[in-house]
Image (cartoon, rainbow, N blue to C red):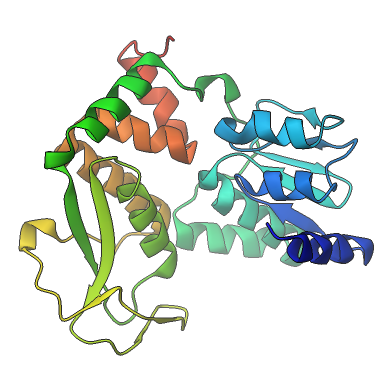
Length: 254
């Protein structure tokens, strides 16, 4: 972050704004001095850096969302939807939050979290190393942009496939013209007119809510690259599935 950006964030806090940092965003707040003396959380991989930048911060384990005064921090990026629903509930009430949760496919959004499950384990490191070293197996995949595509699903799907250490993903379309998403965003494809083999097109699950689309994507990654790679993706997302799957396979030890 540039000094100007950090100063702008501090200025918003000085005006009384509620500041929310999702995932590694806690590093930014720590660098801005906004976590000094506060309770906070962060993505498991960046936690040490957050505490290095802000030694007076108290880490709160086993909570996906931690609010201290007007500053809120979350665990990994999979906490973004629970965080959003928490904000909606605070602003517009429980009924509205439940309505949005149904649209997203999120049954609950409480703050419980098993922090100890998310760490670099031997299976995690082994899978990452194997996938990175086998560079000849790397694939370039495409996500076809269609009018009305759900931008939340698109973000989750693209993020998941980009974390496999086996694939890179680009959005594709027949032309370079912007494509309007479900909520009216104008999306410009990474590649226009590209010819991509059918088996290299990533499914977007248009009839599924975003949270379900993420689950379906993780299943698709497991089918293509194996369950250990899916665990690597889920671990990076700090998604509860990582803990459940690794425990089920007895792989949750260092």
